[in-house]
Image (cartoon, rainbow, N blue to C red; front, side):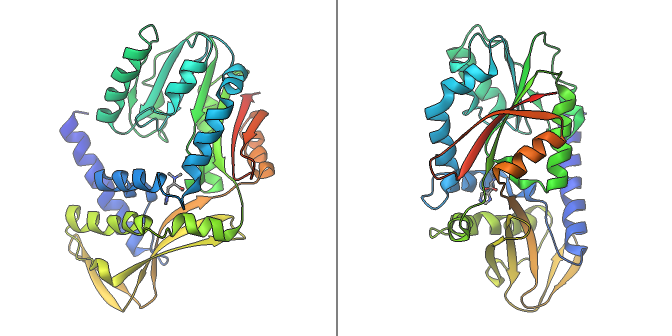
Length: 317
Ligand code: AVI
């Protein structure tokens, strides 16, 4: 597919998913659409917030334990990173690893990926780096990766696994398992169950950045799908669902209203919500269960002193 055809397919998928989501009994929008250019910038801002403990907790674990992780991964390993973005997390890991064989980052955004390759290549000139552009949940993009000899490790930081339902998480790790051989590895980060006040503050921050991030989806629909959302007529809501062990993000209609998208009308009752994101939280036990059920044997994990966040190294059996 050429770039123009690819762009058209992306717009079509967005339109299809938004119309289907707004037609559902519980209105819903897939969280991947939160990340247009403005959304990605807002997400970066979220990561720097005091209330959003996830990014700094993960960074702290990496900073303290990177050598132990590199040792667990072993020598001559090809590191594969789905959703690599600017590859900022892989770079220190590659530096700490003993003679890494290659780095294969996958991401939807070619610009960010190719800029990152150039940056890492300058710092590690001998390291073969082969990026693949596409959606890492689709097996097609994995087929673009070059064949490599030796052991492979899939690197999946950021607690992105939390944005998948348990069923989707199993099928995603199953897809990762399909890419590796027995003895190959998976380095996986996940956010852990904790006090709901801490969780809810992280997704309803006092600087209102997460609110802007959530509402940006309505701006995007207005712009790209000829939508008529009155942004001020919706409120940001985020709460921890104890039974489902997840933070849910919603947009709440503040009044009864009708909104048009792509020439279709959608009715909202006062208080009705659009469910825009799930962020699942794991315990060490549920995380190990997930790994086992997808063919990975947990080997080692690292956490912070409050056990807010965990990074697991597991090997394919
Ligand atoms: C990308 N992902 C791990 C974030 C999370 O915490 O679930 C997305 C996010 N949504 C609101 N704030 C951050």
